[in-house]
Length: 103
Length: 221
Image (cartoon, rainbow over all chains, first blue to last red; front, side, top):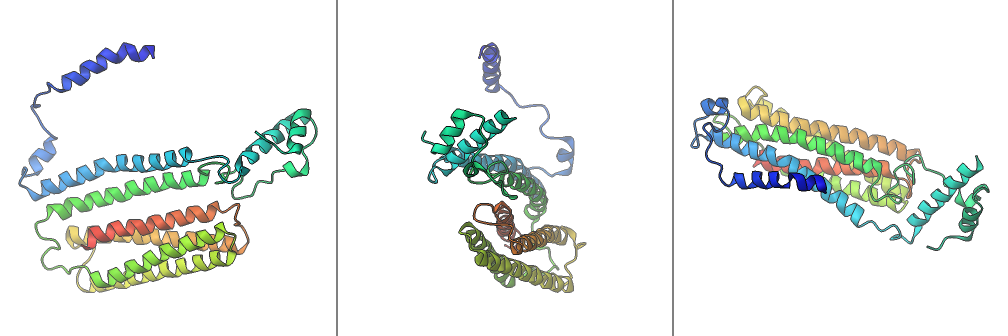
C-alpha cells in the first residue's frame, strides 16, 4: 500500500499528460505508409479491420475464460450437492492426518 | 459442521487407522485428488482443455486475420473468373455438424446419469456425422478444383483452402479423439463419478462445431 502511494503522483501525472498529447511527427510504420494508399485504399481498410480483429481477440479470450472461471468458482457451493463435497474434503483431511500420525 | 461419528472419533484419536468408510479410492480419471468435477469447481482436465482452446482460438484468429486483409481489401469478391462457393450443400453440411454437436451432448448427458448405452450411441453418431461432414466437404473440394479453384488461385483460393482445410483437419482430429473415448467407454473407463475424459472430448467437439459456424458465416457469405 505504501509503495502504491509512492508511485501514485507519477501515475496521476502520466494520466493527466495524456490529455495534452499532440500529433506525433510520424504515424504508423514506414512500410504501411509506403505500401498502402491511404484511407481510401481498400487494402488499407482490410489491414485496419484485420488489426482491430487481431487486437481484440486476446481481450475477448481473456474475458471469456476469466468470466467462466469466475462463474465456476463464485457459483461453487461446496455443499450444493447435498454436502457430499464438503464431506469428501473433510474425510480426506482426516485420512491424511491419520496416515501421517500413524507413520 | 456436523461430521459422521467415525470421522469425529478418528479425528480425536489422531492415530488409529482409517475405517473402511473413510478409505477414499481415487478413480483413474478424476477423483478428489485427481481433478474430479465434484471436489473442485473446475477440474484440471477442464482447465487444460480451456487453455488448449485459447491457443487454438488464437491460431484461427491469425488465419481469419489474414483472410480479412484480402476479403475486405478486395473490391470484387470472389475475383472475376473464379467460381463462387456452393452455399446450399454447405448449409446441409452445417446441419450435419450441428447435429453432431447435439449427439455429443446426448453422450455427455448419458454418462452423467451413468447410462453407458446412451454414451456409446451418442459417441457413435457423433463420429458418423463428423465423418459425413468431412466426406461432403471433400466432395465439395473436388468440385471446386474441377471448376478451377486451386490453392494457387490467388488469395481467394489460398485463404479458402487454408482456413477450411485447417478446420477439416480439426474435425478429423476430434473424430480420432471421439474414437479413443469410444474405445475407453467400451473398456468401462467412464462412470457417473469419473467422466472427465468424455467431458473434455465433448468440449473440444463443440468448439470445433462453433468454429465452423464462424468460418461458414465469414467465408461462404
